[in-house]
Length: 221
Image (cartoon, rainbow, N blue to C red; front, side, top):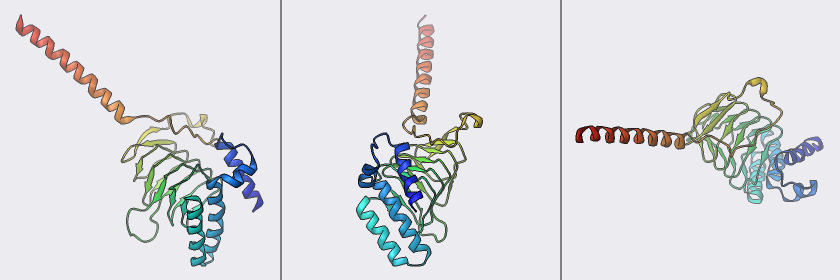
């Protein structure tokens, strides 16, 4: 247990430049508190102490603003930055070294039974306000942009943005160049497919206007 707690603290130092000391993390980081309490709730849940498990998770929600169902499976190295409004559903599964920012939802799409929440691979970064919904699989080394709504599976080594979420980068670098031990947190440097589309339309309009002016000049001559 102490080994896992030590690793959770180290994860905060690795991914949050604002972290200054161990005691600061222990006393003031809600994401750290939420992960610790989820482990207790999950331990109770798998032993069918459902009421105590849910009570612990609700206390966790009240204390941290982060709601993690006690049935969710969470790997090592989860980092929840700030965390207010994060929701993780009952059948969600998170791999190792996952990073979630505030307002993220790993939720379902209805009242279906069984597996109804997403599965995230290792080294996944889900940015502020993103929603990942349904029993879908998010591959390893995936980045999901802020405010995106992801409803379909995403392969490994992709970047997803938009509503609904669209893959805008896939294997942008050689696999040999990717160090999977390093979590890429540059979620602010993502492509803008809508902006690129608008620029394309603007260029096309300019070409059409130039063509019209050329035709009008010939007619006047």
